[in-house]
Length: 298
Image 1 (cartoon, rainbow, N blue to C red):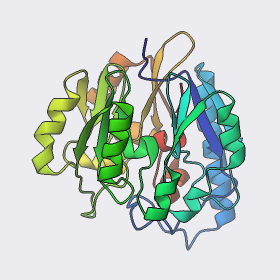
Image 2 (cartoon, rainbow, N blue to C red):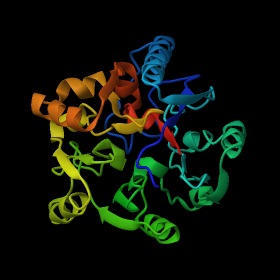
Image 3 (cartoon, helix red, strand yellow):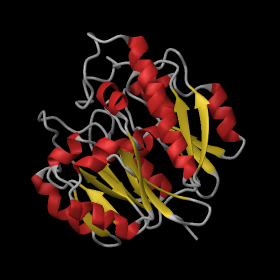
Image 4 (spheres, helix red, strand yellow):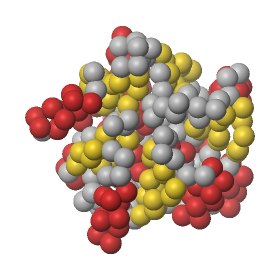
């Protein structure tokens, strides 16, 4: 039986962490760190990493973790690979040159102990064509649907090829962020759970909204997130399960705090618990939140 969410997650403890200037052209959610001590930023990021990891583990969800590379400021966001329930894995092309080095031989070897590597799209980096795994594509794994917002990090034709090669239905659309440009990753504004989907329809360009809303409503209940909540990383959430098959939703404390009481009640209907910790430094300087820090191990 296919599962929408895993019981095991992969995380990378940062060996360095600061505003990655190679990603600021497309990530409009990260802030400049020029007036801050990088040592303090890293110290805070490490504390936030361990708090989230520990909170996830306290709820019975297994976490496999590695220590990142000292030259990879975004290594804390392991969105360069994905795994599948048939115990295969795939590696993807990354836009920023210093993010390409996140695909370390050591991490790939560790993953290959459990998964067969069936596809590696890294060669597309030489052609400036990018598709950044489960950040570019938000999967409905049970129904084999990929929700894909086009951006500088998400190439339309490579996404089309991936969906064809993997027999996924492609739901392709365009978005506009708070600065008037495409949102860099689809997992910023939506997530897919077993029974429900959280999504911000307003950031999807108007000509696609009705189509996307119809698609997400076919198999799931839908909870609408507003544009302000996207700035608080409400869309950057992930469902995971423990060994008792209890479902949890993982997000940052900032994200949880910005949800309405009605939205919190909705989530409490579908999940045993909302797992959350403070990720303020990671969100501010990395422009990503809880979901970006978690890779699913099926």
